[in-house]
Image 1 (cartoon, rainbow, N blue to C red):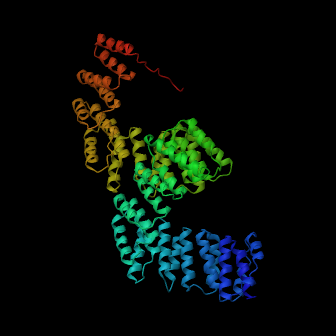
Image 2 (image 1 turned 90 degrees about the vertical axis):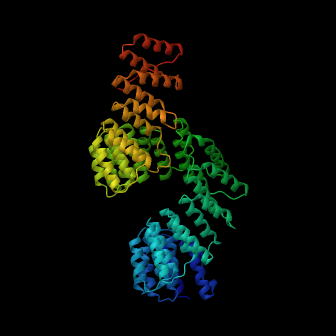
Image 3 (image 1 turned 90 degrees about the horizontal axis):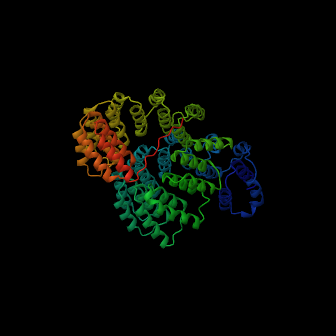
Length: 617
């Protein structure tokens, strides 16, 4: 024992792991040797406060202890839990030198370490070189691929594991269910539920919770709720998973009902539950729900939690709150770290306060807080709002310096920023330099080209996007229809609108899309068709649609339709001054001076005031 103890204490000094981990090692020695009195806990407390000492590498190799593999396994596992890659890399060397590369437990711990530290290729190499693997080994590699957001590889490994005759464990089944959720594969998830039933894992609260979460993320809320209701045991994570499911599927009212039931049962809240609830409030109609949860945050003492603070800032900025109210929320931030700075900068950007967002970014840099891709994306949006091209170019240089130039979200921000600053050619340059494009990438470039009058190029880009199998959304529709309208591509525009209407967009065709169709007909001179679209709509046409039609009538000289549209507009929006001005101008163009004067008098009688124009120059 005297030869073993210095080695163990040296390892404790080397690893500088947490106090709980150090007690694990000491308990291991006590269990193995049965002499707890030989462990000097005073020395252990001293070791805990010391800096990392690399000298134990030599001592480890000098002391040929039979307990070294056990301690190595424990320490590597602790490094994996804390994602301490640097220490783990140094521990890998003695594993090789001591000839422990065939030890299934140590190698499994190394696979876990590299997987948790996003070094999945190293984890795969160790896995491939292992002469023996157990269920834990497979589980570690599967979790590593899930950590790397490669669920298709993870599920493939699970099938390979089953073919190899390895009996699954609840942990590996739970991991695969996470993969099903990432892929949104409800069919595979149902098969995993059948496998869980076969092996008796459905009574395991971890597996059952992951099943609830999987079905919710696959938009199968009925199955998720049915399984949730059948569970004999639920913990706070289970409740959070169900609430998150409702939140992610934009059902905040159902989430609130479940939250109240959770509170009635006396379950203790955690910040994840509250974050999920707050994130589900995406419209001004849910402001009362948000305030209720905010009061719970204060009552439960979560107001100092940086994640909760960030979510509150995000939610209130999405509600388009006043700048004064947003400043009040900012004043409650107790700890200014990267999370809080990001939330404040993003909030100002959402509120169209580009100058304030940039000031926060400069302040964040001065205080030595590192920016990440989220910060940079928000700053690029702020730059676009105020068209500060020079600042945008400087931010682009920072992006290169920080190594985010290949990050898709940042690249999308660059495309949008250059579009808003009028540098469409730079936007195209960034877009075509990207290794892969998501829907946001395409929408950003399509919008930029449409806004700057490159209609034919929008059509060409959209055809290329379709050929790549990327499904358009409501923003895509607006950009394409707007481009066709402004460049006179009537037939193309009608063809695309028909395509969009036939596709399943889950109700994404809004007034804006129909307004683009009316504008398309109006600009081409098909005024009766434009009027027919408005009359056949299932929803009430907005004022912009009437105004677009009246303007088209002025251009093409059709006073009958213009008069009918104006009358309807006056009935629906009698306090809109621009309606009176537009109708009066239309009548004056046609030489109907008495009628034009009558509209002006009606405007005066109704005490409708015309807002004077102004210039920022």
